[in-house]
Length: 114
Image (cartoon, rainbow, N blue to C red; front, side):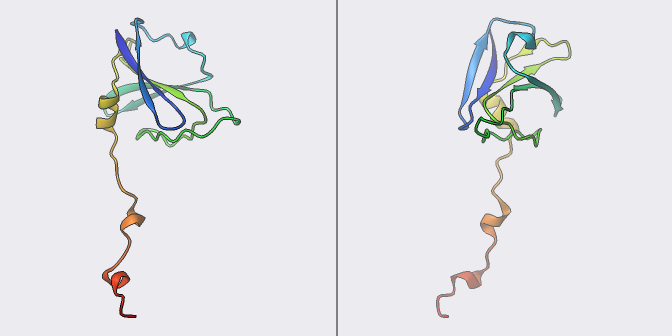
């Protein structure tokens, strides 16, 4: 069985198993299909982006796109054969960086003698 990821609007990532070997996007009820090549990987992002749905808080390193609602993320080869994509594999690709503004202070900020 192959694994793909379903990302909820609240940031929950669920590993979904499929018996499919070939990615047939018509088997899924998503309006938008976006193939993305990132660091030698071929990802396929499926989403609907409906205005009446909450914005998804999951941020992917290979797209700046704002997505409303849940989305599916597949890993596939050049022939659309599904490759397993676990949550751990995805997290290994994502650099978690603190916002530079979080550490924007000087030692004067802690001087309480003023």
